[in-house]
Amino acid sequence: MSSIAGEPALKLFDAVRFPLRHDVRPWLLAAAGAGVLVEMLASLPLPSLAGLVFGIFVFALKVLIWITVYRVASEILLASAEGDTGAPSFRTVESADGLAIRHIGLWLVATFALVLLSIYFGVAGVLIGSVAIAAVLPAATIILTLGKSLFGALLPTQWLRLAARIG
Image (cartoon, rainbow, N blue to C red; front, side, top):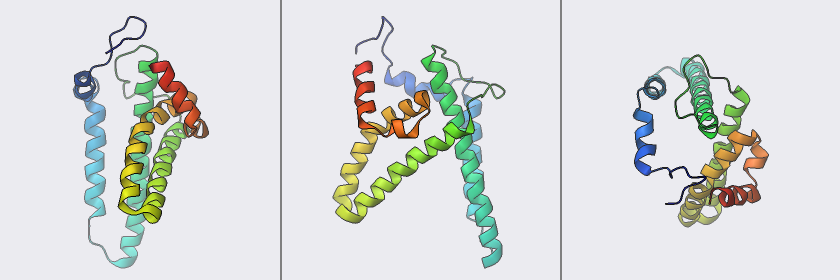
C-alpha cells in the first residue's frame, strides 16, 4: 500500500482494533448498551394507545442515540484529520447537532435510493444499488464531516475529487 506524505498507510487490522482501544471503549459500550435498551423497550407489548405513545417515545430516543453516535464519530473523524489518534473524552465533544442530523439525512437519502431501486428494478436494483452506495458512502461521509454540507456530500464530483486526493 502507498503512503501519503511519508506516513504509513492504514492497515485493516488497525481499523478493526481501533474501537477496542481503552480510550474508545466507553463510547462503544455506551452506544451498544443504549441501542440494546431501546430495542428491548420497543419490543414490549402494550395496549394500542399506550403502545402508540410509547412507540413515539422510543422513536425519539432512537433519534437521540443516533445523533449522539454521529456526533462522536464526527469528532473522531475531525480529530484524526488533524493528526490526533485518540478518542474524544465525554467532556470534549464539540461538534454541533446539525452535523449529526446531516449524517442521519445522508443515510436516509441512501435508504430512500435503495427503496426506489427496489420498487423499479427489484432485487437486482437493490444489489447494484447496495454496491454503489457501499462504494460512495465513505467518501460522502468524509466530505460531509469536513465540509459540513449535505448537498456537497451528495455531489459525485466531490467523491471523485476526494478519491483523487487520497489516491
